[in-house]
Structure formats: structure tokens, C-alpha cells
Length: 378
Image (cartoon, rainbow, N blue to C red; front, top):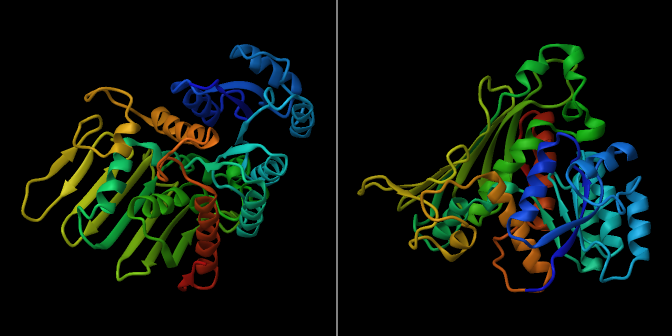
């Protein structure tokens, strides 16, 4: 086993959920060691946070540019190998671009950029850099999502006819109804979040889940978004009808004002021989539907699962695995890519997934703004 991969972190300090998720995920398979970071725009806060989580402060930098400058002064065998970008959306593109231009591998939170044009620029930058780039669509790391992907690929449910993806949350409901409150979160600020809140934040997960599990690409969509208040510039709810390059059709239903909902991502795929259903809040169950057999339930860790699913399973059957494990599976796949080891192309979302996600977000907003018309994705 080679030495641990040297990991840098941008953002994710304090009480950030994303920060905890990425740090724990990086540790789970013993492949990474955090060696440098800018956890917070405030240098003192960043240093104090590093002390709190017991990370040496010698490579906690005052800002991103200083991190790049100082790390490049170090011998190659000592400097950061891969950097995780966990900052607000508007910082993803400039940080990821500069990291790639300076030879770093990148693990980036979604959405990868705030515009489709930026995503295409980043793709061209990666092609020149030749490094590894992963986008953390975390849910692709769940063993039973990977099992779903492999079963569909193997023809277990036949030709796909219908896809239904839902992602319902309620967290914006207590915020949206008061003007002062709704202007206090960066998620509803287009300068920081991009042109979309709901579709850009969670709808994109549903979109990615459809393409990841089915292996098909969405070719066109018709979206209807809800802003609720005239002064709110960001969608907080929306539905998109989608078409594939086959006769299959589908729907993406998303909401952040679904009062009382927590993190209700559900993906259902129906073929002419059967169907599959997975729910993020019950991630260890993959439901197999059939016209002539009783409902079947697949669970992680059993020998009947695919190699991709089993590779992402860390515990014996009956021991629940969750979102930390799912993110850890993405980090595991990235570690294999960085080391030049063989890996399955389903182990982590790539730059292509990030580019298509931005295409989806902008197409959804364009469809709505143009009177709810069908819009083609590139």
C-alpha cells in the first residue's frame, strides 16, 4: 500500500455539515491525510478550527492564493495532491480552475460551477491538466444505488419506459415567508448561488441520479418552477418533464418548501420486465418490482449483489451504512484514480457529470422563463 494521499481542504470549517462529511469520508478507508487548508475566510478562525480538530497549523493558509503559492514551493512529494472545494457555489469555478492549472487533483462540491459556460471552460482546463476531477454527487456512493445501476446495465428490468425522481425538503419553508429571513441565506442570493436554488441545489441530484442509474442521457426537458414571492429571485420548488433519446420519458419533482420533509430523495425506474425503487432516507433497501413475483428487497453486503455494490460495502449484512459511507466510497474511487489503479467508472462522478448538471440547471430555468417550453440539452 502506498502512502496516504495528501489532502487539502477549502472551506468546510466551523459547524459546516459538508465539512464534517468530507473530513470523515476521507478518513474512512485510510487513504487520505489532511495536510493543508483554508477552512474559513478569517485566518484566525481557520487556525483555531484546525487546532480544534487536531490538524497541524503550519499549513493553514490565510487565503486560497497563498495556499497555491506556498504549496508549489514545496517538493512534489510533500505538497498537496488533491484539494476538496467545499466553499459556497460562486467560488467553485475560480478555485477549481486555478487548482487544475497548477497541477492539483480536485474533489469539488456540486454544482461544479454557477454557469454552464464556466463548466465548459473548466472541462477544457481539465483536458489540458490531465489530472483527476470528481464532483461529489454523494448519493452515487450508496451500495444499493450502485446495485441499481448494475442491475439496469445487466438488463434486469428490460427496456426502460418510465423514470420518476423526487427530491423533497422543507428547510426553506421557515425562511421564505419573511423578507428579511429570505435575504439572509446565500442559497437565495444569485450572486453566490447561481441562477437557481432548488434545481441547482437538489434538482441536480435527482437529474444526476437518473443518468447515473439508467446509463441514459436526458435529451430535453420542460420545467415549471415556483418562486412563491415576486421579490424572490431564486426558485424554491419545481417540476421538470424529461425525455431521453429513446421512447422513455420521466419526471423530476423537487421542492424545498415541502413542509415537514427532511431529505426525501427517491428514484424509481420502470422497464418492460420490472422496476426498481430506492429511497435515500432508507438507503439500505433496493426494492425490485415485478408483475409476476412478490416484491423483492435487496440489501447491502450479500453475495447476490454486484462487485461495484460490494466494493462500496464496509460492514456485514444488517449493519446500516449511511451518507458518510457513501461519500467515503467516492473518496475511495478518487484515491484509486490518483494512484493510477484500476477502478470502475461508476465509483465517482466526473467532470462530465458536472458539465451536464450545469446544462440541466440552465435549461430548466430557460424552459420556465420562456413560457414552460421544451428545451434541448447539448
